Image (tube, rainbow over the protein chains, first blue to last red):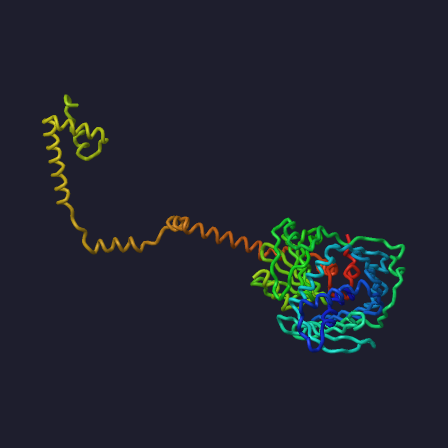
Amino acid sequence: MIRRASLAALALFACSLTPAGAGSQSADEMPLLSEVLAAPATVSYSGVVEIVRTASRATTTSVYRIEHRAPDLTRRTYSSPPQFFGDSEIVKGNLTFSIDAKSHRIVTTRSDPAITAGPALREREALIRANYRAASRGNGTFGGRPTIDALLINKRTDRPAMFVRVDRETNIVLDKQEFDAGGATISETRLEQVRYAPVSTAIFDLPKGYAIVQSRQVIGSSNDPDRVVSNAGFAARKPALPDGFSPIDGALVELHGTRTVQLLYSDGIRTVSLFESATAVTPNMAPLHPDALDVGGRTAQYAEDGAVALLTWNDGTLYYTLVGQLGKAELQRIATAITP
Amino acid sequence: MSEMHLTPDELVDYLHGEVPAARSAAIAAHIAGCPECADARDAEASLTKVLRAHAQSQERELPPAVVSRIWEQVRYRPPSVWERLSAALRPAIAVPVAIAVAAFLFFTIKVAHGPAHAATINAAYYVENHAALDAATPLSEDDPIPQTLANDDSTR
C-alpha cells in the first residue's frame, strides 16, 4: 500500500534535484525536506494503487483503491488478489483497522505514537542520506501529470535501488520501482487515476455489525532498541548489521507464548527484522520449501513467503530469524555478521 | 646415665643412628665420660666396619648378558591393564578427556538434536510482526497485502 510519509520522503530527492545538481545532497536542502515530509498532512487524494512484487518463487500482486484525507485518515479497499476482494484497511492516526469482509471482523492494531513522531522521522531521513544519493532523470509524465523522475542509488554498491516519478505539483509519488542488487526490478507501485480533492470523513467510518478483535499483543514496544534488549529477560543482543542497516525500532513480543525480541533495522529505504529468543522455537519453514544456507559454519534455513524472505538459524544460545524484503545473499551476509 | 653402662643393643642402635636425637646426645655425653662404654663403642664400631668390608668383598657383578636381558624386559614389558588404567586416570589426561566427553555430549544433544527438537510455529507470525513494526515506523515500505488480513491467526 502507498505510505504517504514514504512517498513524500522519496519525493524529497526528486524535488531537491536538478539535472545539474544530480547526486548531491546538502544541509541547506533540509527546509525543502521538511516541507516535503509535511505534505501528507496537507494533501488529500484518491486513486487506484497497483503493486507487483517479484520474488524468486512467486510474484505477488495487489490492487486497491486508496482514499487519503489529510492529515491522517486513509482507507484502502482491495479488489485483488481475489481472496481479499472487498476487504479493506482504515488508518486513523496510529490506529489501523483491518476489515475482513468475509468473516465480518475488524482487527485493530495500535502503533506507538512515539515511533511516528518527528525525531524518528528525522532519524530515518538521516539514514536515507547516509546510504543513498539521488540522481535526476529529468522531467516526465505519469498518468497525464507532470513528474520529476529520479533514481536512488545505494552509496555502498553504487547501484540503483529505486526509481521514482513524483508529481511535480503535489510531491506525491505516482510510480516507484525497486531493484535488487543485480539491477532486476523486484517491485513496482503505481498510483493510477489520481485525483486531488477533499475526501469525505464518512468513508472512514467502521462498518457496523463486525466483531472487533485486537491484533496479537505486543508486550513492549519502543523506538529505543537498547531498552527492548535490556528488558528482554534473557541475554538478547543488538548486533551491528552491515550494508548501512541501523536499528530504528524494537518490540518485545510473544510468538506463540515464546518471549521474543524483535529489532527493526533500516538503511533508510529497506527494512529487516531480527527476531531473537532464548527458547528453542523457530518458524516452520517446511511449507515454504526452504533452502539450507551456511551462516558462519552453522546451517540456516532460507525461505520466501511471497515477497518476504526469512532466514532462521541458531548459535547454540540464541535462536535468530531475519525477516525482510531482501535477497538471499544479502540476508546471508547479514546473518553471518550477526554470528560470525 | 653415667652410673649405668650402655647395653650392646643401645650401642648398636646408637652407631646406626636409630635412636632419637635427645637420646643420641645423652649417649654421646655418657660415652665421653665413661671409658668402659667408650671401649665398647669402639669395639662395636670396629665390628661394624669389619662386617661392611666383608659384605663389600662378597659383591659380584652380574654377567653383562644377564643385565642386558633384565633391562630389555623392563623396557619392553607391556603395561598391565591396571597400569594402563592408572595412567589414563592421571589428571593430566583424565581432565582433558572428561572435557572432551562433556563437549561431545553437549554438542551432540544441544546442537545436533537441539534444532531438530526445536518447536516450530507458523512462519506467518514472524512475517506479520515484521510488517506490523515496519508499518508503524515512518517511511515504512509498501506491503501488498495487510498481514492482519492475510493471517486468520493474527489475533489473540
